[in-house]
Image 1: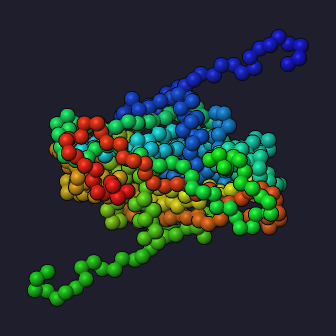
Image 2 (image 1 turned 180 degrees about the vertical axis):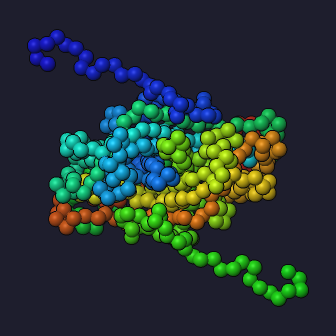
Length: 230
Length: 230
């Protein structure tokens, strides 16, 4: 600000989430991490999360798009959809669990027991709240579009009044969060090493195939740079 | 059987699951399907499912491997893991929701509102039961390994007594099941068609990179055909 001494406007944030009973795994605890940068990277690489909530005492897990703004996750949907409607009614917020998983490779051991996958996952526990502030709602919707393709929200028509009214957005703060990561090669019992079975990792390929344009693009519409770069 | 007239040993199965209140979506009902072949295909293509259960009244969603034998799904884990332990104690079975999702492409519309992804998902509701029959448990563990790479269970050392004792397996019958599929191009408002934004689908690439063998394979161990074929 003009006329004030230069200060750091953002106080330093802790680099890790605080573990809780729910985010400390009962097994393979060495795979768990609470590092914020790792959590953000895993979240930002995903396209859909799996959102869990409780309905009539039973769990429901639905795949859905999401977006991140700092330490806030946003999920959107029709105002009539079950979890979004429920989050609007639940007084303290709707208890949810939001999970994002990347499978990076298939791990083939000589023993059936040690077969596994290399993966990176994030599990977020918390209360989801419906977003009512119009400014936050617009920011959340931009984040949802930019989560699909970074930079895309600036190159599309923003939601109009009718679309905003038809869309519910819920927020889940990144607070009770853990990541879990398995990387590397095969675990094996020493006595299995001499077995004649092939063992190793089959990496899954990631990437994109060539974009498929709509047949009715406005004349002269070129593939934007942010897509060509992918 | 010898001495009996030839009969069809397997009575014809219905080709579709019966919709229930939980499996009829509140919106986009045209994307829902109860076709068994479609459900099986989506399940068989996945590597991890997202398994939801309720713990202390709150939802928990964890990624985990799974396998399918006909109309039965199997999930395994340490006997100490929370859902597997809970499934062993819950009298009528543990209420779970098991979801498998494939993201096939990113759908970029001229309007932010119509951005989407092409996807195929299966959601299974039901009660999970711990598998106690040793024969069924072995069959389930084979299915779990063959789900990662078809044919692999025959080319690895089966679980020994100690490993079997350390592994819990739960079963979830395919009964209350639905699939949901979005394919094709962009939905757009007619008045947006003249906008200068690029619109179309960015397909996600699927496949494998070159296998990475363990450095200590037994001499002469070749890459098996079932991996080379991938």
